[in-house]
Image (cartoon, rainbow, N blue to C red; front, side, top):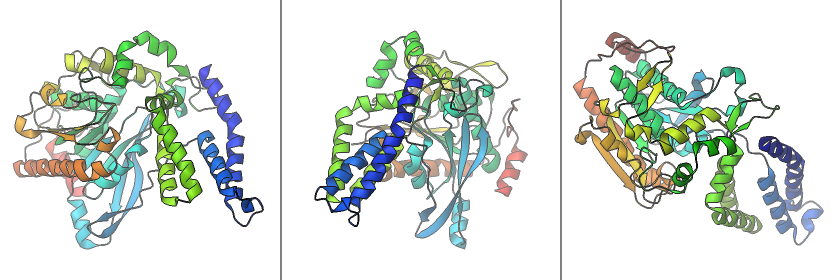
Length: 455
């Protein structure tokens, strides 16, 4: 019933939010009768804040039209490469009529960014994508809102997430010969599982894996997020956090962890900070500080846009990652696309270089949780492992904002480039074992070479 109550409340608030938006514009217009009021600016600011607190936030766009590459404006065409029931693989294709720039773009590494499926849309990583587009061919997982996925598509589990990642990696390998993978926050665990399974089977694995702020070993330095997941039982989450999608959505009847509950949890972690931010926004509107008000709008347009997660995926994550610690205990079995169980063995990874990134002030993934990947993947030589703690960076700071651009990205860029050069000089033979799946798999050297010539 909670989901229905929330939707009813949202529907009732919608006309009042629209009315507040109209009133804000009327009072902010100096040519209108209401705009002549000496308190017009304050009244307009109040209505504007009311509108933003009451409005419904839709999925934002990436909105990346161009990127600057060494002083040359390169056009960006965003397109869907693979469309799965619960996820789209998006590519940001770059175009330029400058011959030198085009030659440079073609020789740059291909990177798969695996975005979190933890409440927000993949657009939360917009700054990550924009920054990396200067030096890389960029793809990203764009997870769908579960309430919009018809019930006929079946449920989505953590195992399906792992299988999706493997399919996307193979797609890039089929196009470029190989690729690099970056996972941000939640997907560090399923990405590690995906690459581990590929290694165990003898498949070609990515050149590098960069793990950023994720709960590889959630036992280390537990945060408030970890404590909630650890202190409540599996049954508590199932009984209190799972609801069915109302009839007015395409996914009607699907069991989900609603986005509005997740958003409430986000806000509850720092309520005073959000209250202060909204009050500052109100004062900036009165002062006419357009730069500050626009920055506030951009942040909360992203922060307030949330999606529902399929119940099976959410509950699997609670159990596997935060309660049973299946990855670090070596007890995680993943069901592949053929319905067979496979044991996740990170120690089988030997040819993929590893880079773990943590924020000094991260209050979501505590210190040491991501770095744990370096010890778990014991088959990777220490010379091909790297760790970075970004000083002064919180959770979001390691993939967005000034610290991401100035501290983290230069290290990520050099790590990818160094290992791409090592792989190019070594030119190892691709001797993978074919795997029978429902998706195309690049399994032999001739296929990879042909794909490289086409690219």
